[in-house]
Length: 265
Image (cartoon, rainbow, N blue to C red; front, side, top):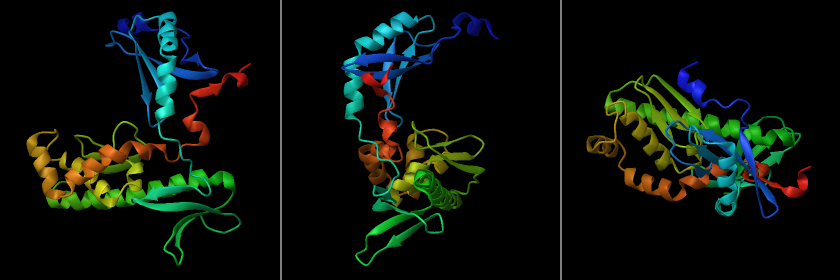
């Protein structure tokens, strides 16, 4: 272990601190950062997690005092987040930008499939036990996302004359996609919830990085050449992108950081 690590290590330091505000307890995750000069708080919208960043030499006492002082801010920010929408029977979610209702079909063989009734209303039908609905919808959306993203990425790669080494789909909370210097692309599966032109733009964006590993004017001209809808897609993401992160969170997901005081013993 390096001297720096030994200097800043805190044995048996808790991972989170409870902060009480108006009869509720908010769990605040602690994170030390060697470049931090002060205490800072932020809310991860995708996970509803409260994170307190501490300076290397910061103390737990100071961290707790800072978090408690900002209890009203934590409560207000969490309340402002869009309500979590779990993958459960009766919930309507977007699929490729169009609404579709999750319908649990208990006792029916199969996994997940789409049905369209005579009125044009679409249902995402899920077979099996109720406790399997969330996982099966997640798995279905990830498969659909990977299929669409692979097709869109390879289409752009052919246009630009580049090769893609690997494509992975994950639940990324801080970015919609990424590209490595080795040619590996990674995307958020939540792009399958957005309209197709948004997914196509993200594919064009990441594949273009195989030519220009930067965000220079030349890079943006390249993206716009292979994706004429670039500006429209970026505007959609700016306005609606954050909302996509609320889908698939269980009811407790939105309130994981907010535990009623009466439940504590």
